[in-house]
Image (tube, rainbow, N blue to C red; front, side):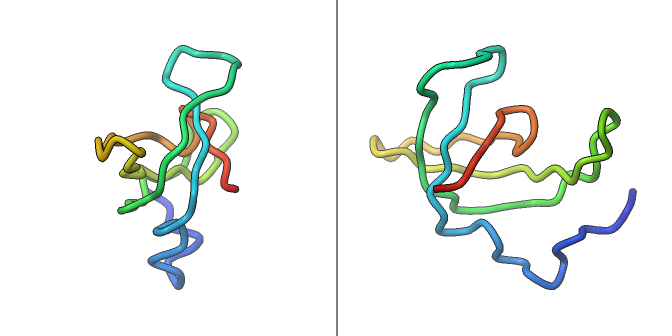
Length: 76
């Protein structure tokens, strides 16, 4: 596994507002939440992109785990 390109920023995404699509959804409004935890997943096979596993808490209080790349996450 290649090293985390942001290892010097271990809290890079925590506390950020993230908008993402559920797996299998190609477009639409998506879901929004606050990142509560992150873990480096390595790089994707297709595109060699750094991927992170993010724990996201929504307005309801429910926490789900998403992939930065697979869920097409973007930060606001």
